[in-house]
Image 1 (cartoon, rainbow, N blue to C red):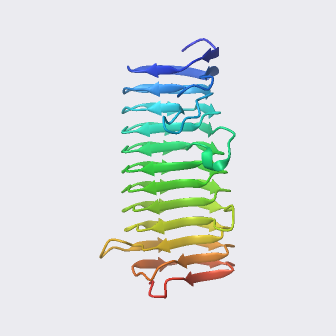
Image 2 (cartoon, rainbow, N blue to C red; image 1 turned 120 degrees about the horizontal axis):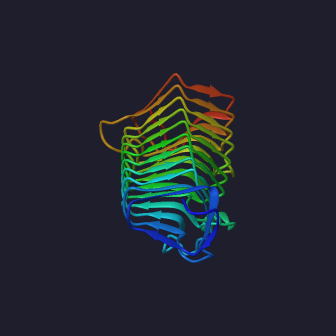
Image 3 (cartoon, one colour; image 1 turned 180 degrees about the vertical axis):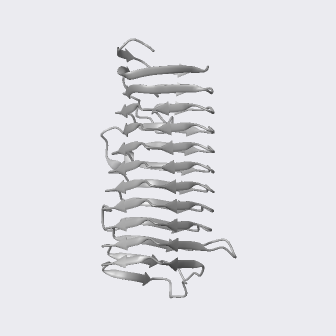
Length: 286
C-alpha cells in the first residue's frame, strides 16, 4: 500500500500486483493519456482516487485502461477522465463498486463510463456511473452486468454484436436510452429499472435485429417509448420473450417499428401509457 497523498503522472502495470489506496491515494495524470494502464494479469486496484486523463478519443484516454485477464478493479473513484474503465480483449476481470464520472463536456463528446471490446466473462457489478456518454459492450459475450446505477448519459447500456450476456438488477435513470441491443443474440435482461428518459425520442429498451432475448421482471417508466422493436427477432425460428414486465407512464408502451413476427408477450402490466401499443410497420407483429 503506497503512503497517502497525491501522485502525478501516468502508471503502467505489467506484472501481478495489488495496490490498496484506502481512499487516501490520489493519482492524477494531469491531462495526458490514460491514468493507469494494466498490461498483464492478476492485478488488483482497490480504493484509489483516479483523475485527470487526456481527452483523446482515438487513443481511448481513460481512468483505467485494461488489456489483460483476471484483474480486479474495486472501490475506486474515477473522475475527470474521458473514458472511465476501458477493457479491450480482456477476459475474466471483475469491475466492482467503482464510482465513475467523465469530463465535464457536452454529452456527445464525453467518453464511455465502461467500455468492453472483444472481452468475455467479465463481471461488471455494483458500479455507480454518472454523466458519461455510454456504457458499451461491443463484440463481447458471456459477461455479467448487474446492480449498476447509470444516470445522466446517452445509452445507459449499448450492445453491438454481443451474445449471451446477462443484465440484471440495474438502475438506469435520466438517460436518453436505457438498454439498446443491436445485432445481439441470447441475452437475458431481468429485474432492471429504467426511468425518466430524457428527450422526445427517449426509449427504455430498444431492439434492432436482435434475437432470442428474454426480458423479464423489468420496470420501464416515463420514457417517450417504453419498448422499441425493429426487425426483431432477426434470426429465423427464434423468439423474443417479454414476461412480467411493468411498462408505465410512457408516451408509447411498445412500438413495433417494422412488420415482424416472433415477439411473445405474457403477463406484462401496461399501466397508464398514453398509447399502450403502436405499430408503424403495417401490422403483423405478434
